[in-house]
Image (cartoon, rainbow over the protein chains, first blue to last red):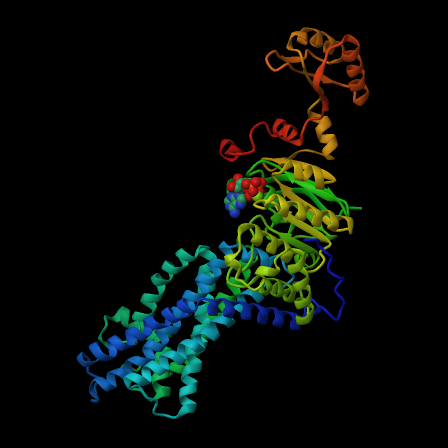
Length: 285
Length: 320
Ligand SMILES: Nc1ncnc2c1ncn2[C@@H]1O[C@H](COP(=O)(O)OP(=O)(O)OP(=O)(O)O)[C@@H](O)[C@H]1O
Ligand SMILES: [Mg+2]
């Protein structure tokens, strides 16, 4: 362990600090790191995905028979109806869990200190977090789609529309991953982050049109369910996939679900990202 | 001209707790400052303030000429940090950890790769380089963390208790590494609980307690400031202890302390080695045989304890 001093880095070895290029590369390096971390525990990754798969199977084979979708089609129609709900719910749970626990973990283990003492842009660590979540969400969506096709879910309006639907899901996931980052920074321990998520994720995903029709709910809840970003995204997905939709109300978000979903996602992402980057400077303080 | 590390009136409050209560520091370029203090004294907080991880409540500091509050990016470009608790990614291998840090310093992939192999070699981590760092022992993780702080040559290096948890061999290697860095002109601030370490490595020492610097100086100055030198000896024949005591009385500043059973005597003195040789001469002239005699300077431990007024451990509880 004799320590030779690093040769003075020459301009060729080192990217100019502070530039856009450097900042992009920092984000890329952190994204790589987070993705690698995810791959290193394949059990966790697989078990995390097994859970929604089990839910889908339970719903498809146990509950689907007890629900009827107006317009006929029986249990098959309910399966098509419920799948976009599962897609959105799974994306929400996986991303928010991932980012909040990942962030809290990095704080607890001093990784945030390590990164903050390095000459990288403030946002790079956070951007790299959110970007890795996108990677994971793509994986999750692939698994969910396979599972959906197995239980009989199909798209009916062609690939182009379907892709639009999946993009809306990814954008929603991106927005929620910033919510997760904020929560992770606020609670600072992975355990607290894990349980804290249930507090908002369950109401968010269940007070929606994922599995029931908001029209059956009391007025206040119905209003919340209709304006819920998850509902808008699910409704938009149903439209894009050509899956049955039970929405009988003619409220704005249900008439323009794609637009509302996108506005929500962008709004949430912008606000939470701004707060997160600001908080990052003082996190650990 | 202010030094490579310069702090004036640095204060950091966490709610009601004042972790750092007005610290002034100045470390000239190329020098090593040892920050000593009991648990909870504010050493880590001081390091975190200087490395831009925390914003001071008040006071100013510059590192490598850059203000830590106004231009933290410039500070970060100039420093290396190894924190009190090794910050390495447990799911990445040692090699991946170092490459990542290199790339984040802006090194091209190839340069980062080359530097990584060098460091793995130097820190004796080659055998474990491609294992996840979660499988490393505490000392290995510590070495990886230190290597990460050295990926690019920092002009100012902060080491928070770098040798905590290292075995004696690794500690010695670390010391050599630090000495080499210092010899090559890197300014260093290291905190430590091992006074021996500060004694050996630091040009200057600042003793912190309750968030304030309560003493500073070279290791020698600090020793001189507190303890006195003393002559300690053991007489062979315990029967002669009276004679030896009256002899020492003539040379010492105070009454010698005598242990009649073991024949050990000790007396505080002002003079140095000359005085010791006079004593030995006298002893020989009076025919008092001795087993062992020496001039003893106070250790930094004694200095430390007398300055901070207690055992370093558990003083955190007492004061709050
Ligand atoms: N984030 C924090 N919030 C509240 N109090 C803090 C925080 N960080 C440190 N402190 C308090 O500030 C004081 C100084 O802590 P610091 O970690 O700087 O001590 P230290 O000298 O490094 O101790 P040690 O030798 O145990 O590492 C302690 O009383 C500690 O409890
Ligand atoms: Mg400390």
